[in-house]
Length: 156
Image (tube, rainbow, N blue to C red; front, side):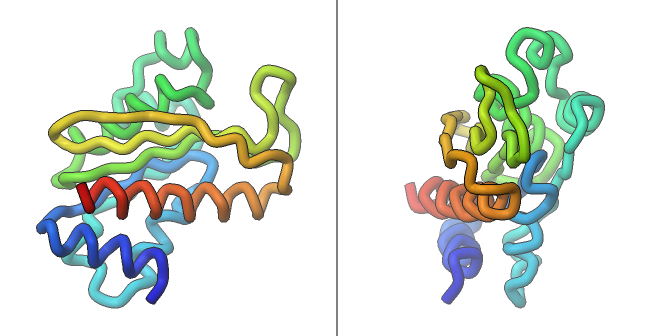
């Protein structure tokens, strides 16, 4: 069984629906979940919000948060996850925003990805430093981490 199938089964057992809010992964988490036959009873929707404008318009991320912390921040990931929860019929959401590369800066290096999960009970955010693995590897690692987060949150 795949990581995505495990994630769906865990959420299904709880009776939860999932939504995603993705930036640097560009829909990879949504794609992984919907690759699994029968996912429609668990996967509610996905938001691909690659630009700051999309984050504000689709998820309600505040411009002040973006200005103060930048798109790659736990604060923005937090608002993205909450925005996905508010703008869907999901019980559980995950958000991802990061720097897949190439590039980055001294302050926000390639491979830094911020995640958040949200339920009606609350929201938690954290950052993972995957390192300069290359764009595809960072995006794949971020997708897998997001699936793990969803599964863990649905298990609680």
